[in-house]
Length: 204
Image 1: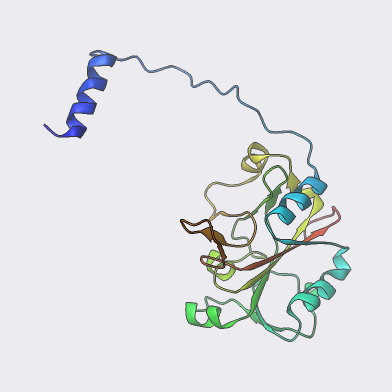
Image 2 (image 1 turned 90 degrees about the vertical axis):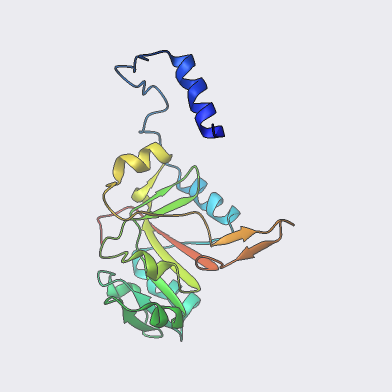
């Protein structure tokens, strides 16, 4: 008899011949609907070593110029072109291969939602956010979101998101640590994350 069989046998013996399943699973944990705190989001992002920029919609191109001016960037097909300065060489993702994506210097996207409590940004593959791969290969990610896309906690984010979409959850730049706890950035995503927070307003 294997260890697995032994453990399962003990479980069956403890449960009896016909364990009753609960009719309803209790859902009395914290619900969605808490107040969003944009300042808390900014602090959490800074804790994760992301760079936060707060500006008006018309100033996004200036921020992108400061971060990626003179470099080649990939952008999703639905990204507002007013966010791109003339100083960047923008390459629209039309199913670019991994080799071409790895050769660009950065990526500029929008976002679906951001969680203040955890400092997490979620992308859902919408036209202004694009495929997941375009935010994983370039070294720099500039992500633009509106203040009204910020929610308080994870239940609020889940309530806004469609689970059938390809969701990418981002909490700061890519980072990992080895057994000596030496932090290494950029192993499985961008080393540099810049988050541009705009005032609330209609979707772009």
